[in-house]
Amino acid sequence: MEPFGPVIYAYTASNALDDGLYVDGQDPELGLADVSRQHYAVPLYLTQGLADYIRHAVEHCGRDWPGVWHDILTISRTRYKAPNPTVREFTVLIANTPTTHTAVHVRAVCQPFDTADPKAVIVFCLPEED
Image 1 (cartoon, rainbow, N blue to C red):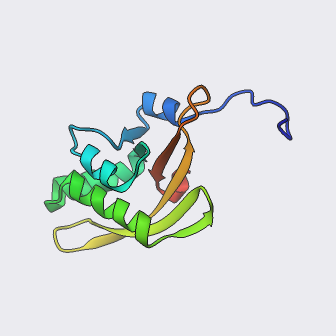
Image 2: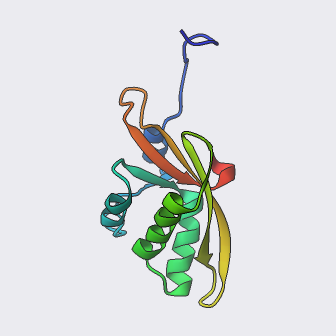
C-alpha cells in the first residue's frame, strides 16, 4: 500500500521519450548504440539539456557523439558520488571551444521505463532536470 494512496498519474521515461525530451542512448544515427552497450546492460537515455552540451561539442569543437558519450559513461562508472542506490552524480569535462572545456555536472538516475513496463533504464541529466 502506498503511504499517500494510489498513484494517480506518473510522467515516465517513456512519456519523456515520446515528447522529445529524451534522446535515446541507443540511437544508431548518432552512433550511440555500441558505446551504450559497452558500458551498461540496460537502456540509456539522456535529456535534451545534456544533449545540447554534446551537440555543441560536436558542431563547434570537432568532437563526435560516440566519443563524448563514451567519456560521460566511463566517468559515470568510475568517478561518481552515490547519494542513494538509484542515483550517481559526477562531473565530466565537455569541450565548449576547440581548446577549452566546461565542467558539466551530471546525474545518472535508474528508474522504471514506464508504469506498464517497469524494466530499469538509466537517464543521464543535468541536476536541474531531475
